[in-house]
Length: 602
Image 1 (tube, rainbow, N blue to C red):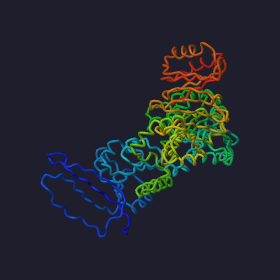
Image 2 (image 1 turned 90 degrees about the horizontal axis):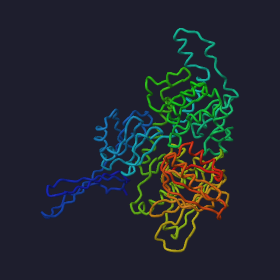
Image 3 (image 1 turned 90 degrees about the vertical axis):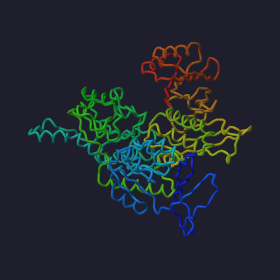
Image 4 (image 1 turned 30 degrees about the vertical axis):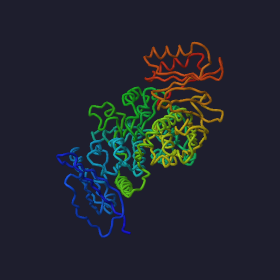
């Protein structure tokens, strides 16, 4: 049998009486006949509809490299594909060129928009991002067009960690300011007296790859290292000598704080006026992660007030920052232009990592660094769609109920269904629960391709359990439950009799509903945000909470109360369209009959 080779098949047919042609290109690997020949077109009746298949065999696929890539990566690509290095393409030029390419590699400067995928005519099979962030790639459009998107998340880890340590030490000893001073003809030894690192407490916010490498180096400098990360495995932290703590404890204990979390809706402006108010006076801050995790106006106020003694920033909300930025010009701020990954070794490593992922994808292999889901048949997706949404939202709810610094390690997913195991594939549902658990505090995009890999990488063990029900298997599922074991909860009532945080949901009218929290039955639509309140079951509580929210101009979309018995304990679940202000939440918390409450964002 001949060796498998990539083929392009072009189907051509007339659309109307004007005999204009419609063309659709498909690509896959198969074994062509040998020798390869194209048969002449057969004669046909004059009025017969034409359907011509023209087969063209390419020896190699074509990879368009739209931004500079390390030579090691280019050499790897050239062994497998035709490589077209065309830099600084305009959007129009990229759309024109992409129809001739099977793969595209970019860095952060090229926008891979929906128009690019539409212009590819179905030929583009993989987009490789040489780096971590994929903000410049339209993931929804990529998935719709059956295009895999891969990135290179590990190669720049050491470079980013080293830059974090470099900024930490330079800030502590006023290196940048002293250098500028002496170049200006001054000799100000007394002004630039620094602080020692030995014995100081460093709080690492985000204990992933970069954060853990920073911890190793900081320990070598004699620092005491603590960290906040709800997913950090305790055994890995202990092995390095790092104590896992809560977010507030990290703020109050730290002499230095180093940011290593991704920018997500949950972490956007996480460091704000409220966060700074909890820190030690004279704390020093390093950020080599993402600019948006810090409220820059709040940081400026904290610097001016002396709460923050110094800051060292490699990233900014807007890059490059405005020339007139008061933060950049502040005397106690050290800045670099997003150099975290900028070493020769890191650039070569990123090039090799993304090239290997692209080549693997073109060979039909599943990439561990894939960041978008594979195509799912329309029939399966239509049936599972509401349960897919339910699974993700249950994951998001469950992880927001976790408190403490121990981390989530064990999660069980329970499916109740009248269908047999062979008639219900739960891989997509498990992936969506994983997505809900991990994405709120991570830059990883979780999908069917990388869900299990991502969970394993973070020390998260997921198990599945099925409850077989009698009745018609017309609906794929009756309900889904998510259980998180061996953790404390922000909302004690979410702990079921089993000792686990438990949430349950069902689909009603094709919309996801929350039907149980802990041992309490509720019934609310999973949309907007939710307020969970445990209260003494007595008259007037609903009215008091409703009045507080109305005064805060927050619209209540739905409400449900589950109770153990009349006049005993009850859990009130309130759906709100807008997020209540801190003041409104404080007023709810001081109502005497309310024993605990929590705000959950969906």
